[in-house]
Image (tube, rainbow, N blue to C red; front, side, top):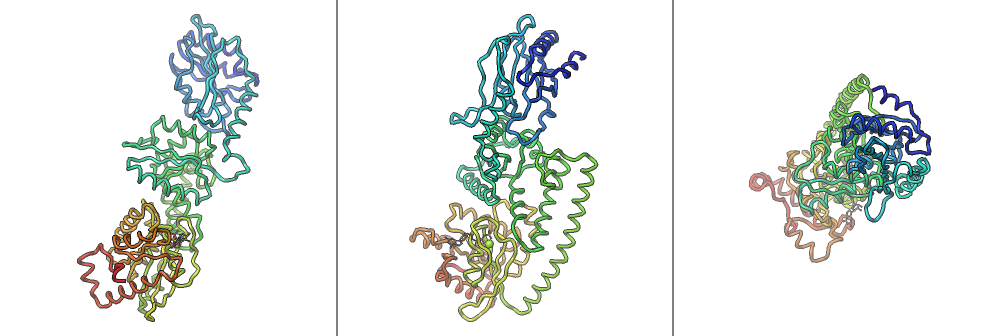
Length: 549
Ligand SMILES: Nc1nc2c(ncn2[C@@H]2O[C@H](COP(=O)(O)OP(=O)(O)OP(=O)(O)O)[C@@H](O)[C@H]2O)c(=O)[nH]1
Ligand SMILES: [Mg+2]
């Protein structure tokens, strides 16, 4: 024990991988106790940890995995003894990649406890062969020469050259998108595409996509250990600083993955919540988003320290101590109740406004649909308004109402709403419930569909399922296939027939007349009370079809 402790006092000259004295002393001790001995050595030549393993392997403790800064390499090398002069193992190389060590070194112990060969491996910059690390040829220890400091520095700058996302000039953060599930490839592709759009709309570059099809998701790391190692290497090579999953993770998974990889880990819900938080919206909208974020964070707070750093905005900072954590948990809970109270009073105000409107008996038609389907564009063109409409998800968060004079001289109120998305985070749905509740005031719903989206069938399904969850299926719907200008001419008619929908292009006012007619017809049917029969008989079918319009 005393001999082990003495190792800590040794200092290795910065230009050497290990001093011959330390190598000899550790080889001798290893030989005596029949165990591997390892050192984590920093760039100043100080020994940060001494680790003793079994005769065949050695586990680098988790503690040593804490990050010293935003480096490409960790700033420590691992030098350890191998009994029987054995070369580096697969585990050694995995650790090299996982921990992003400066070097992985094994010192072979000879048959009589003498120094035999030295085995050195290091990471390599991104290359076309997809190689992650390389091993130098084994050399007898006494003949080994390497200018350690110089070697590691030039290696790091070479890796940096190929990791553009990390260089200051680019300024945009980079992420690896990880997609795991057991569905069909087609569906996975669409989901990946959608998540990619969500990520880029946040100003983050997707540097690489990692796909894995798994029947069973790993409870701790989602993907298998081997795959996670590949992910870390890929992140290192591409310069990615965060991992974004296109699914939701449990608090434990977020914690384990960020501990293992030392990277910021985001799941789908967090990504969507972040997008919502960044968009401009009303006070109620802001409160709802913050509520959803805090509620999602709360269980993660009590579980993990890394997730917590998101609150302060600092990534990679070590978590707070137990007492601080408790204080913060209470602060979050207090904030939640405060926001809930505020939201309640705002909603009350809105209800009053709505009652006033109902008294005037102006029919309300609400536009609903998948995000980016063109809802706001449709509202703008129909009512000559200028609501923000952009080619990015979740542009609209607040309900906007405009008056629309229908061709027959009748007026309605047309409202635009937040878009839906598959697997809409439950917290968000709950948070937006009061906004979405206004949809209950609608006499008719215009379900706008992006007919040019490759998976628009799936999108219709998602929107209808959310409407069902909001108990809105009883409100009659008019299906509108939008962006028909992007479709080949013959296809529009077929699609409209199949979906009993009206085909339009929200960008072109002259295509919108059928919507006017369908609304007029829908309201007429409603007023005559015939709707009661229709709803009872066929809740799922649209009220108006293209032919009626
Ligand atoms: N080619 C074409 N593009 C359209 C049409 N309608 C909308 N767009 C475009 O689609 C993108 C999204 O339109 P928005 O109106 O913002 O969509 P939204 O449904 O309100 O989206 P969120 O509010 O984000 O849910 C914009 O870039 C529009 O210009 C159309 O009929 N044809
Ligand atoms: Mg919109």
